[in-house]
Amino acid sequence: MEENLSRFTGIFNQAKKENVELLLFPENVFYRGRDEGYKNNAQKIPGNFTEKLARLSKEFSVAAVWGGVAEKSGNGFYNTTLFFSKSGDLIAEYRKIHLFELYDGEKILFREKDLFQHGNEIVNLPYNSFNFGLSICYDLRFPELYRSLSANGANVLLVPSDFTKQTGKAHWIPLLRARAIENLSYVIAANQCGINEKTNAESYGNSCIINPWGEIIAEFDGETTGLCIAEISAQNILSARKRIRSLDHRRIE
Image 1 (cartoon, rainbow, N blue to C red):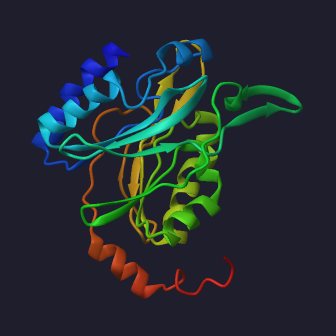
Image 2 (image 1 turned 135 degrees about the vertical axis):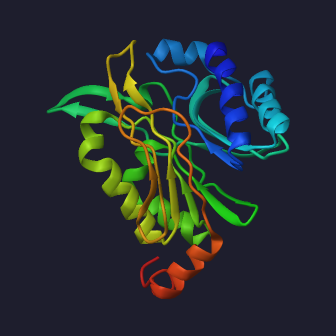
């Protein structure tokens, strides 16, 4: 984790040069591996760890959303997203609600709830000119979460992820575009790429930014790392929502 943390100074420095106002990092941004490793690296929030993250935002004046970080709370663990303002204040926390499971027939290949507890709070955050809706990876398959976020005012949906290559090829972009179109919102999705050396699981990459009309306005391939940058506009959100008024026409709550 310390090695990863040290690398982020360079990313913040690059972001500052590119006039980036908000950074979104993927799920498992500090550690990817087996359950024991997550437990050993889990952090209390707030604490010394969050103070280090706060200093980065404050030093470079760049807001940052750190995708799923292993949080230790009492005797339990959560997969938690942290949102820091550009002044270094921790202004939102979201604990992942939907925990991933993978099966081969009846055989369990992976079950996130063996490690983490379910979060139970939907989190919106008004910040600058936007209202951000927080989610993590597997949440993407549950449109009711994003409908609740948009009903609470969200117009930018954040999806830090570690989406696998196997499912990503079929589902990643269609699901992201669907969430953007359904909610007439920007979707910003940062995804891990490459092979996890401890588990041999391969992540799909293809981080992207999608506008409220469902168009991809910035995208990486399955191997590229770095800053995937786009400008988002409150006016584009208003224009899409005036053109298609489905959010006003809902009949089922």
